[in-house]
Amino acid sequence: MTDLIKHDPLVASNFWLELDGATVSLLSEVSGLDLQIEVVETKQTGQNGVYAPFKAMGQAKMAGELTVKRMAPLDIDGDPLWKWFNDIRDKGMVAKSRTAKRKNGSVVVYDASNAEIARWNFYNAWPSKISSDSFSATSTEPVSETVTLVMERLERKK
Image 1 (tube, rainbow, N blue to C red):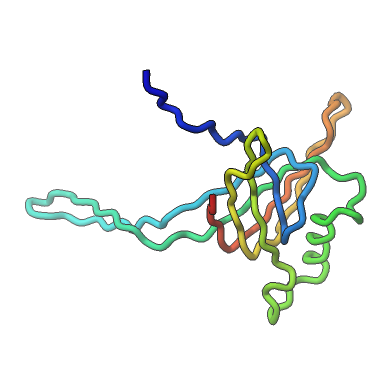
Image 2: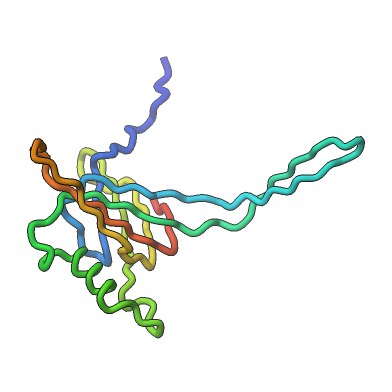
């Protein structure tokens, strides 16, 4: 019998988020690791009115948004993500220095031995939104929040 599976799969629960080399804690979920190529579609009719669609490769589309879900911190004044968001919201971003408030980062996946096995790098990101869970008197779940990071480029390196 031939072994069809040569490697263990990536496990979705073994991941970490880095922003400019610093780790982001309290994570429960990261999504938005979408890479896409633009499709250029041309529609034409040929001889005898036969419809002939044609699809070609366009440009590689830029990355959209990375969504980070995490347990809400008790103190937003000491939290790096909240500090970053509030700084941008309150002071804006200076046009002459595009890199001043944007950050590069990575989503890193590890195997069961804690060896890095996959990495998505993103560039020129900044937080555009922080959403907190709703509250309920009947819930015993910790409050989580979702942070939306817009980014200019995303690539899988491993």
